[in-house]
Image (cartoon, rainbow, N blue to C red):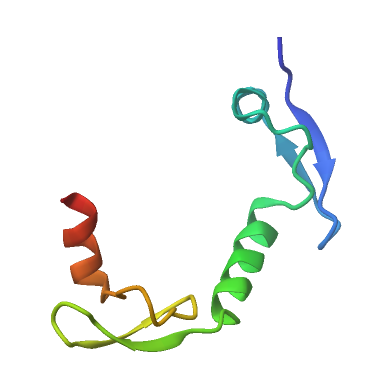
Length: 91
């Protein structure tokens, strides 16, 4: 049903293969657009977004440890360090 397609990366201009398996995965997930970046440029873009993410310092509501989170905490809700967050998530 699907066949490999050659696409051109919009960032670096290199050709890359959009495999039949990837196309099937996109269809299963309901994605309507084909990828516009090659794997290397997608990875570089994700890393850049992560590096530029604003982090907020918090004090864990459970253990009191100082940690950082990628959102601005609201005063009316408890905020947990990553370890305590996992414990609450499993409960």
